[in-house]
Image (cartoon, rainbow, N blue to C red; front, side, top):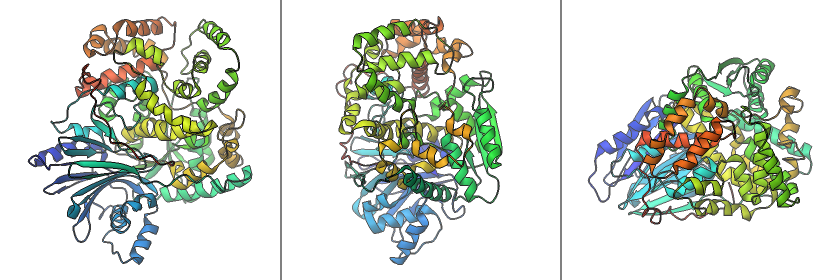
Amino acid sequence: MCGIAGYSHLHKPQDRTDLERSLASIAHRGPDQQGVFYSGSLSMGARRLRVMDIESGDQPFSSFDGDITLVFNGEIFNHRELRAELESAGYTFRSHCDTEVVLHAFHHWGNAAFRRLRGMFAAAFWIRSERRLVLARDRMGIKPLYYCQQGGEIYFGSEVKCILAHSVIERRLSVDGLNCYLSLNYVPGPFTMIEGIFKLMPGHLLEWRNGEAEIESYLTPRVTENAPNTLNEAAEELDSLMRQSVTEQMDADMPLGIWLSGGLDSSTILHYASEASTRPLKTFSITFNGRSFNDGDFIQEVSNHYGSEHTELNLDGDCDLVGTIQDISYHADEPNADAGAVPLWFLSKMTRQHVTVSLSGEGADELFAGYLTHKADRYAAIARRVPAWMRKSALAGARLLPVSDDKIGLEYKIKRFLEGSLLSPEYAHIFWNGTFSETEKASLFHHASPQPLAEIVAGMNDGRGLERFLQFDQSYYLPDDILSKVDRMSMAHAVEVRPPFLDSRIVDFAARLPERFKLRGSTSKLVLRHLMRDKLPTSVLTRPKIGLDIPIHEWFRGSLRGFLQDTLSRDAILDTGIFAWPAVEQLIGKHLRREANSGYHLWGLVTLLTWMERWNIQAPSTALQTEQAEPIPYEMAASQ
């Protein structure tokens, strides 16, 4: 696992300190080794975290003829079978690492190599003879990759800070990115929160030559034929795939553990990992002792069931929350209003004291319909049969319910559901996981516009039923919120996190699976529960989904109240030039007076302003609102 960075210098003098600054900014991603490559047209480098082939896997890697040079971030879990195929084609290897396999695969198959790679990756290839740069990102977006084009040059890296290390890059807020962020709690690709910097979308490659770039998908269309006919058939197939994926992803030359929440997904990973291991596994968890949402009992039951060597940390308001939030504002690169970043920070920090690699359960919810929002999508279809005026009346009554300090209390769910039922199915789906509605955003944000989000949401209209919502979650929520959060918090502590559910074979299996095997009535992830029904403790199979999060409603009324009021003070809000103070003041006041639970809305604003101050981000000008840089047009494939 590594971090990569690079830039071209066709039209300006080469300054090697630019690359040094870029790599220094991501030293946390790869504390074990730094390597650089310089040419007359392009410079690039890598910071390496040694996980596989400790002795001979240092980067960059160049082909034997010196024509192709590669910097690489990630792991390829089928590298051994690809190596055998390449050896039979005449290639020889000087190391045992997957990076060299990727290099030779690209030399042999060209851009077609990327669809053969089973794993997580972001890669940059410089082809000297063609003066051509190729950037590629894994199909699910597990590993990040950013780029910026300016003045005929290109800048790229694993984190935004790699690009900001170049003094020529202006640090100005993206109006499109911020419009989406206020609605979704994250910035969906290809946007970022900084004008002119973009994400390379999952499953895509970028080719740059002589100042011009093109982006295209390297994926093939989804195959939906040959679906299992029965739930038993589906469970048997998933059983085989999980065993293969987990076994492959346990391959590491450094100590490995498992993030355990006591829920279905992480417990499933522990089950298959225990089957593949000859000794007890190390597991790591965050608990919230004494809280209604504490997973501690479930975690302990699963740990005891498999005999793991377990380590956990209790997270409460006495932890250094303010300092952690400020640290996160550095490592997150762009604000992510998912408050789960806080416990993930502490989990990663604790994990690094014991292991370098950890398996986790990310991806199962997006593949098999595991979120409460997926149930809400179905319930809302029924609710919309009731006249809108009746639902509005019910919402008015719900707003009279007492406000609780629960992380996501019943009254919060009722109000949020009724509000969403008044929106279109597409906007309701994102509203339930997001914060500000378009109406609320218009009263808060001076540059509010529905257009950026509308462009993202429009893609949902191409699908049918549950699948369109799952496709949206896999395309945006998963890579731009969940995986981004995991990558930044884990790599801040030099921990490599691997999500076995996102093995390409399991993703393809889920795409073929009928909806009735994913969500049936109130039972989510049906096929996974059916598979694990005789393997996991019954309590794990029947427990409600909680999620790793913090009680932000309560903490903003308690231990973080001063931090909230200082960060979102009148002067701070007016200084941004982008928000209306009366709207923010009202939001804070209603929350503190317990007239509403607006903790997640306020968290998004606190995260944003903390990040802007940390990175000296400038507000967009009125002129820039209509003159923003556009991302390179994407050639999208009907696949993930």
